[in-house]
Length: 161
Image (tube, rainbow, N blue to C red; front, side, top):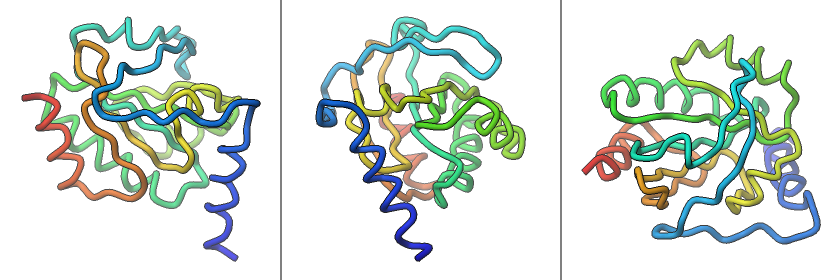
């Protein structure tokens, strides 16, 4: 039953809205979106990050891989100060996101996507999903599912070259 919960949640995420999820590939422009961070700061992506490489992470607190991986992402981020990280929560409310981020204690911001509209525009059908986006707003890498620190490090190094 425990294994079915993440699958069921992924299917529910995929079923949100009227249109099928977009298929986003390496080399595609990152879809634009506007949302807010937990602290209320507006986010206009990718415009707000122009010229900066970004690791864009889609997550939820029920995702069993998200917590340990978000801590690993923070370790990699600390080694690469030119990297920006934005953790977009898919489908949960502000209080749930705030509690999880406080528990994690990571040094990067979380943004809200309560309706999963942003996740869907990125073609996210399961969590976690991570995109690496260059300073020109172009997708340069994608990690779907579980990853380790070495994989995040390789992807970030490739993005920063």
